[in-house]
Amino acid sequence: MKRISLTQHLIEEQRLNNTIPAELRLLIEVVARACKTISHAVGKGALGEVMGTAETENVQGEVQKKLDIISNDILLEANEWGGHLAAMASEEMESIHPIPNRYPKGEYLLLFDPLDGSSNIDVNVSIGTIFSVLKAPEGMATPTEQDFLQPGTMQVAAGYAVYGPQTVLVLTTGNGVQCFTLDREMGSWVMTQNAAKIPAETKEFAINTSNARHWHAPVKRYIDELLAGKTGPRGKDYNMRWIASMVADVHRILTRGGVFMYPADARDPDKPGKLRLMYEANPMAFIVEQAGGIATDGKRRILDIQPEKLHQRVAVFLGSREEVERVTSYHGDAADSTLLSGK
Ligand code: AHM
Ligand code: MG
Image (cartoon, rainbow, N blue to C red; front, side, top):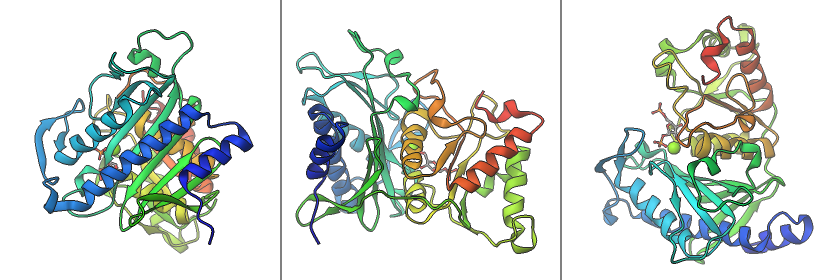
């Protein structure tokens, strides 16, 4: 089998489609290199002093794990000096991180969730890194949070790395979805799938059912119908999977189809769902759409949402077209649709 490296793919993609100028290629390669370093730290486990909590809280009020902070630092340090970025933003940092004055600045903005699925670190279950790349607005002098508040349609690249039995980097630059497996001996990313496609139909769903009592009517209705199986309105039996790492759940869906949901619920009207729009939902929605799936917040296409703040949360329904369309249509039918729109 001819091995195509990440670098070769990026160069050929630029030659063919003119979508990856040199600076963006550098950015993607630097992020990929940082993911390699994170993968190495993850793999050390208890031998590497990377487990457990750091006894600090992030801006979302969540207790940070040591690996959250280590991964954040790895991404910051790797991306500061190359001259390809104007600023970064992360789940683990309250405000944006402009490139320090001692380094040249580029025209891109990078957002990331450095270590997604943190609750799985200590139990040796798959976790990942999610990233999204935007272009800085024309004429931007000193970057501000406002410069990041662009809808997901403006992303020029997005991806994730999943740290599981294999480490896999999944990437889109708007021309399909490519997967690269980390060759651990060689230290290189090798393309193992070109043009990943999510089947339109599925018999598998992912949702944290322990929240069922808080769900709004459309989600209850949709899940009840799935659970009713062959003799219910859907006429088939469904299977359920919930890894509690969005990266790993999305990777399964990219591989064999499925629908992933983290809805808004009745607990806290100021918290529309758990996941964050700018560095979780947007990059995943870009990837899912590029693989033929869809992604909504129950009412709207996720990529069309105009962000209002950096750490904004959003309800997420993504994956196989047929299922996401159905659960989204149920929201349209709901009497009180405002509950589900993320407002
Ligand atoms: P994190 O970024 O702090 O790790 O939180 C996001 C994670 C997602 O990866 C996952 O889908 C979800 O939280 C799991 O939530 P729950 O704790 O309800 O299972
Ligand atoms: Mg996360």
